[in-house]
Length: 424
Figure 1 (tube, rainbow, N blue to C red):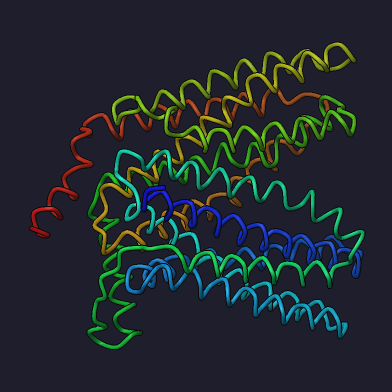
Figure 2: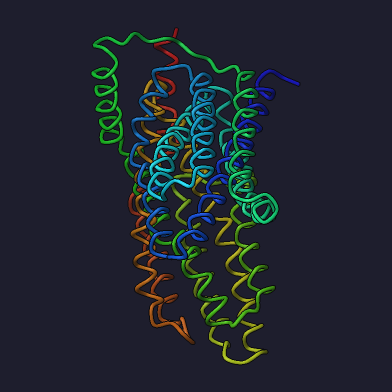
């Protein structure tokens, strides 16, 4: 096995185990909180608070650009193991839900540093021509880990209980840390000119300047945020409502529908390489055009809902049109990530990727609020909400066409060529 392939294998395996352990841990704690309090508001508050640390991602990006990324991955999994151990003892002593919430918050801060470190490492391990493929593979496998964890977690929770399930996550984090020690990531030590705090602050400012001054990166972040504002919340909020309320799907059919859309996102990520092979700045808006048209066709199919045969027609239409949208959404996200990885100077890539992650993730709850308003009165028909969303997607298509109409594919090589000249 080639050296770069071995590094990617260790990276993917370590991340899979780490993410799986984290998903098992969050699943166990969320069920524990719900079982102990029986209150949906407390449960939702704990989950919401644990999502806030995504705003710390830029700090994680600045750290990723200054320190050995392999060491950072190992340290983060060691920190996760220590936090999981503390949670194990907290559950054993019957401490308050507040303590669990605090530890989950800290755990999420560590997790917010992880993605920038990984995405900043990939361009150093593979050729530029393979960025889409490797990014897609990493994201697809991690998504699969998040899908599988709740299934296995549900079985183990009933057999072992929350405390032992938390204990099992410690083993996952330790195993991930051990595997990550074998990754060889190129690293050139840079001096902390003005002390750690001032240097990292200065690095953050440099990263924001890079985003602001590079029009392609700025536009890419904007489009990524729009995807997470419109399409991602549609699948998170709209899919359960459409399947359960509009189509009256039974438990089996509901489970199949939800699983298919999770699978679509995974396939879109894993197949991002071939799916985005012919994408260019002057044509990638077509992915949104196709998605918008598919949503209009979905709307037509769902209009048959109302009786058993009509509900089945609606279900088939929803699945046949929704799966390609999910795959396109996942693939275009990978394409945007790979584009930014290509054009960002290596000394700023962690900070820039972290900025994209923070902005894109912050767009999700805003989109969920919009979807909640749109689907609020949808007990029988969702024609108008989906029509509105389809128009929004087509609007994003036009916006992409407008924003990138003067951008050439050669623009993505400018920064890399400049770096190569400086290295020589």
